[in-house]
Image (cartoon, rainbow, N blue to C red):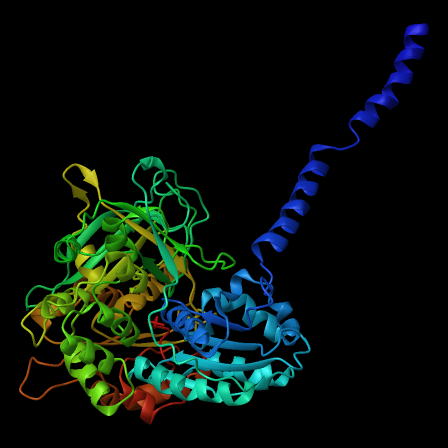
Length: 628
């Protein structure tokens, strides 16, 4: 009896000991984790009372970030302290507190992506602006927008931020800048910037210090004895992330996909049009037709070695570039510590012509006064300087290697060169497959870029030439490609019965291969699929009719109800897609207006300005990645 009594008395104690279940502990840990993230990773905008210029950037491929860095460095020349800030990493609700800092100014360098969308890192900021009702009275701001005027929603993000900040009470101190990548984005930025700073001086009553010398943002640290397990070898964020892959996979944590197919699609001609298939088995990556696949290429080994030879450096030296501003959220310009070889191969863009700010900063290292003068002239806003930059750098497509070769007196220290060069960015390709048919495979269709410049050099596209050499089995090893999927707004209509008109020249057919595969799959499931009409253009039937067998089979089985192909150079007079559209205008009009197909449900795609100019209400622009 006593035993049973003792036992009944112990049970409540046992219940007390298990008062916190595993679920309670998990939820508590989750809450603590979220609080740590909010207070640690979402940093305050007020790291220092002495910093009064914050330059936010929305950037998909690095240009917006580069412009933000340049503006933040400019601030020092006007007796102000600036910082470039990624809105994704900060608590943007603190924007309303900026007036607490004397002479504070917010600058926004905002790129537009796809169909008027914000860039990935500006999405949260965009949502906050849309949903919030913050009072921004007293906040002083200006916006520089980056876009491409050939797209329907030209600079939509920059325009929205400029308008919305004013609606919330902020005061615009300088006009919205409009950068056009279809023209000369660099020139647009320089022209805006040279008017912007005088306006800042007038508004805040400050003056330029007259200090025009180079301002280093990072200091060099050479590691003489470093454990190689702590050295970055091409990873984008987490050290050894390519050795131990962990989902989810995104821009900072790409998946190493194996190349299973690499085919040359064209049967002749001097171009190389290729089809690749990437295996994503086990990655948990999901995609939809119309999405983009981003791949991270590497620079050509020969170029890297030549730069090392010209500058007389040991490319295998391990180093770090540490931010001189200890309060900055960006500790290094790229993952460090690493080697110069890795930096030039994986992290830096050495293939494109450098921007004018790079030339200006490097000019001090030219021993020939004439070279110094020309480099500084090219970085100026004078008509003569712009013309020289256009002809000698842009038109001649001189990259940094070509400039070093053609300017023997220019020999900058490699660490400063690494600091100045922009980051090597991911390349985006429309996915040429449907996940309904290829759940574990992503297809790419691309043309290899290679051309001769006016200087006689052969320039090669970084990504396409790198992909071209990615064979399924290379010396017994699988070829892999670091990649992730970026969602797109480019979609098939929700109703399967809606007719679809697709227009795409050359490799522009890529997303439509996915669309056609998906509609064929739906038809195979017994769905009533509407008309599927394709207008496609290439040069010669017997050379570059991409996916000819597949398309003709889709037409034979009735999946494609109309296959209209324009072979532009198979006859004396050139025939383009727009000629076929005009020829079939009655059928197109019937589909759009009389076959119970509303205008908004007709999905089309075109790279020709003709259609957008003459039929702006009928043809929607294609969601193609821009370079901003």
